[in-house]
Image (cartoon, rainbow, N blue to C red; front, side, top):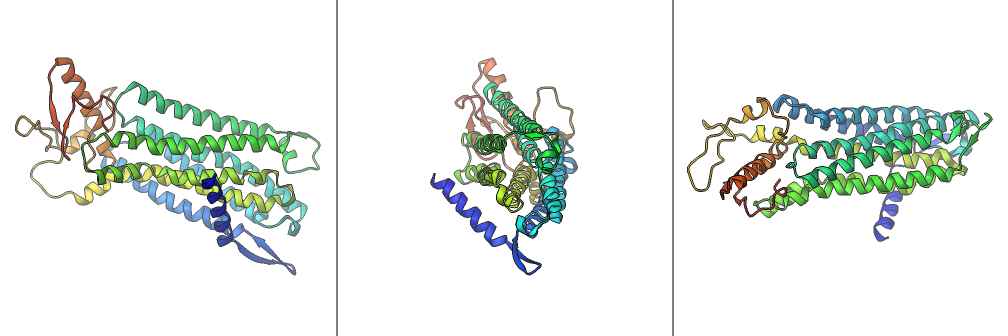
Length: 384
């Protein structure tokens, strides 16, 4: 409860800090319109730059474009769509108190914010699914880990789709939601609010799960504790999106704020916009490792990737680094955690080596760059 209380308090301080005032007639009317626009487009710009860097790393350096990259592009487009619809909403009066708006302005504000729900729900949702697919391509083919990630993907997708269906099915005809002059019927606002609370809770739980999941694997690597902490934090940036998701869920009370809906919805819009863009940024930053590796690569006659050797013998020849990315992959072969950040062992290759050697009954110790790992002593599926 203390954490939730702090989130509410922080959100109130944040809203107060970004709140703008404009003159409408003779009355000073508080408005969040400018804040909504600033947050939407500034964070969109930052997210777009991070995604562009991601594509440079994935396509230009690694020569790879996978399903998570495609989903991130869709996530970015949905986030931009959210900003476009919010811009139209602000034009009509989003962030301004209802007392200062005409009936037409109120109707159009509510209409465009309502239509914006499609983007605000799907954008962060697909971003989370994209991150789960990224992890699927990195983890060893261990049954429980794979099934767990697929369960996360299924839960996120189903919950988001059901939420959208409920949102757009609550009024017949749909225009009844924003135009009370149209004869029709709508469900109680509490239905959408309760659905939103459930969806927001699931999203926050997924953010936390996906943030902790990589750390559970990094912690089993034989490397310095500082590096483990760094990598765990790098892959766990989704906690920032989780915080925005929690505050957004709390702000869903705006749905039933009939007395000042146009102002209350602006507060909610700020947090769902932050959530969507923070998901984009958090899921893309871990993929920028190849750029760092390229910047810090030292000239050497020995190709990168040839330093791996057996503990009991001399250097073991391996393919040059670029061959790892250009070569054809088998159906079961996956990406490498080294593709994300320099110095992270190739989880799948190590796992495959362990399985092969165990079948032969041979005990083998493998050097993985940062130290020595007794692969027979390590539980299968816990090496990342």
